[in-house]
Length: 170
Ligand code: S3P
Image (cartoon, rainbow, N blue to C red):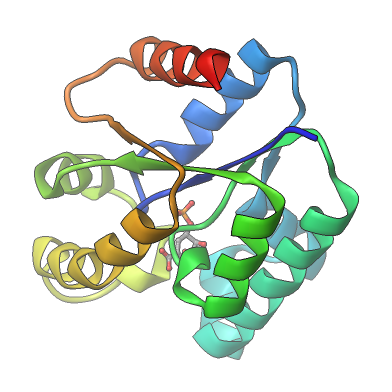
C-alpha cells in the first residue's frame, strides 16, 4: 500500500506538487477539494456561502474516510483544514504517509494575493488572516507529518525530486 497524503497551508503547492509527485511515483492523483466539488456540484465558495463551514468540514471528513477505505495506491492533496479535526488526523496517520509542505507567510501572501477561491481568507487583511490561521495550524501540521519539506524559493521540480529521494530511502 502506498498512500501519500500532502498537507499544508492553502497556497503551499499541494496540488501542483501532488500532480507531479503522482506522475513520478506512477500513482494516480486525487485532490480532496475536487472530490468535494464533484460531490456537491458547486464550487467551494458556494458550499461555504450556502451551507457554512461546519457542513463543508463534515463533507471533507466523509470524503477523506471514503478515500482511505477505497483508494489504496495514490497521492492525495488534502485541503489545508483537513488535519484540524482529530478524527481526520487519526485516519491520515493510520492509512497513509503524511508529507507536510512548509511555506513562509511571505510566500503564501504572494501566491494567494489574487485568489478568490478560498473562503477562509475572504474579507479583511490577507496577511493577518494567514498569520492567525497559520499559527494555529502549524503545530498540528508538524505533529501529524511523517516528512516535512520546505518549499520556499524552490521550483516545483526541485520539491518533487526532494520528496522522491526521501521516499526512495524509506
Ligand atoms: C481550506 C483549504 C482549501 C479548501 C477550503 C478550506 C482551509 O484547500 O479545502 O477552501 O481551511 O485551509 P487548499 O488547502 O487546497 O487550498
